Length: 218
Ligand code: AP5
Image 1: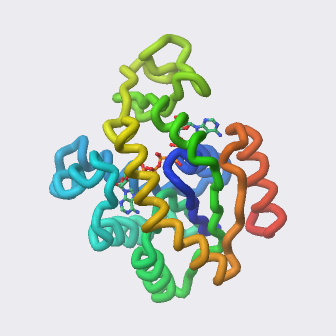
Image 2: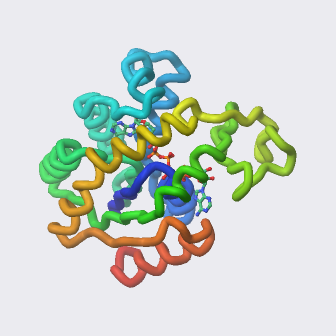
């Protein structure tokens, strides 16, 4: 099954992407994760992306589309994949469609995670990430057993630079202008399914599994 996770920052796309990928054994392709890794390594891609990401702006379409087309040409994607955080503009969506059409493939379902803005802000500003293994925590919702330390690997937890309140507000504004139009784009293709991103992690996962099963995707 070829799935897209769509929704504002903080809606829980990345969290569900990880568990769905484990459960259905298909790759989770997160453009945010790929870009952050490139920034960490200081690659040419990372150097190009860093300023955009730190200020909450989108990285230019031509850079991001190239990353995804490359990721989708890997062998591991034959049984399906979960695209998280891509597409994020109409241009990206159109280029994705064109690239998949060339392979006689397409997106089966777009899951739109709907969430009130105040919850997204609370989740993002409270998020802490492990510097070593990348695991996500939240100071209130998913607290680590020991403050500032990753439960999984003992690494140090830090706040993403783009999770500071001012940058979060800019990310949400950018989402409204550049990404929200994709809801209509996919609705017109009859592949959009709305779910509540405000549910807790386990309940939302259960709901997504049910949605896939009803749509006969699994
Ligand atoms: P990206 O990493 O994609 O950021 P985002 O979409 O803003 O996604 P987030 O990770 O902030 O939110 P999420 O919905 O995944 O929520 P999560 O599960 O993490 O992109 C970062 C930047 O990269 C962009 O700003 C841009 O610059 C660039 N970029 C990436 N893709 C691009 C593209 N296609 N085009 C151009 N530029 C691009 O959860 C958030 C928090 O909430 C965590 O603390 C988590 O523990 C907690 N949480 C999650 N689910 C729940 C729940 N159900 N209940 C309670 N807490 C929860």
